[in-house]
Every structure is written in C-alpha cells, then in structure tokens.
Image (cartoon, rainbow, N blue to C red; front, side):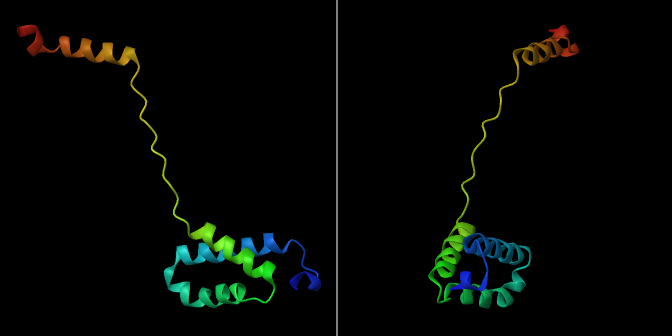
Length: 96
C-alpha cells in the first residue's frame, strides 16, 4: 500500500492531485493526452484506497454543476415614484 511508504492522508493527496490535473485539462484541453495516463495509473492502482479515491474525485470533478437562478430584486417603491414624476414632467405630458 501507498501508506507504507510514509505517505499519510492518501485520500486527501489523491483528491488534490485529481483536482490539479483536472484544472490543467480545463485550462488547456490539448494537455489531455499528457494527463490521461496519470488518471489511468491512479484508477488501476493495486491499492484500493488510491483507486477508489481517484474514482470518487473524478466523479466529483466531472459532475456538471447546477446553476441556481437568483431572482432579481424588485426595485424599491421610491424608484417607482421618481420614474412616475419624471414621466409626468415631460413636455409631451404637459401639452396633453
């Protein structure tokens, strides 16, 4: 296992590596042929902690994010009054 070599927090390390590699691919898709073998090595690693953590990190990194719709705040009532006063004071409104 990887942890026998002195590496602690294997899951955190693998997750960070996957995030870094994913950021590189997102910045430049031409780097994918260079990055893919690293993903494959981690996914096919004999240590189940490494392969499982890599799988979960990839699933999380590649999952599409849901965009929340933020409702627009209605204008305050004082703005409606100012607009109504401005319309009433136009020359066309005074002529009518």
